[in-house]
Length: 221
Image (tube, rainbow, N blue to C red; front, side, top):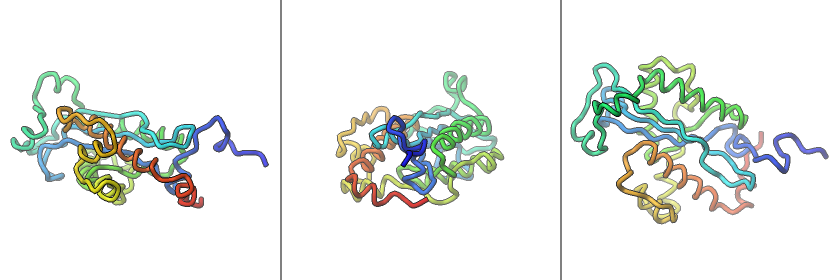
């Protein structure tokens, strides 16, 4: 029987075959507080998860943006000190984007990956994922980018839960160390760095599943 184009030996399998048409995308945000409606979203990074040719999960390309605080946004000083971001640093201001432009750019890039993987939607992967989803959804609402938004509106994969089950750890740095993943505390609270480490951790946990379990869990189309 002739193999389909998605199953040739020289081609990585499609993520759509593993997650019922969903593309897992690791997301991390840095914010000026805990209230998604009132506090500024300052940085976002997204990394889609794909297969390599050996059917191992690997992080895909990173899509990242520094963001200008939206008009009227609250900037909590304690939160800014904790994450180490000065929204008005001249170097940062020179590269920062408005929410609408940044989200449209990132969503367009994710659409290309999603299309290549034949996925219908993206699903957010995060460490305390509903925090990231809440700020992302608030920014989508403010920026009018709902039609470009690829993410499921409420379902997530949370690496806190996965780490607790796998390692008995809930803190990202400790879970990474337990998995043998290098983690530099000085780089933490950079959305890009935290997303990269969360993506590595997510892939590590999934790749630890034995192949026969993985095969039995692949969803029927």
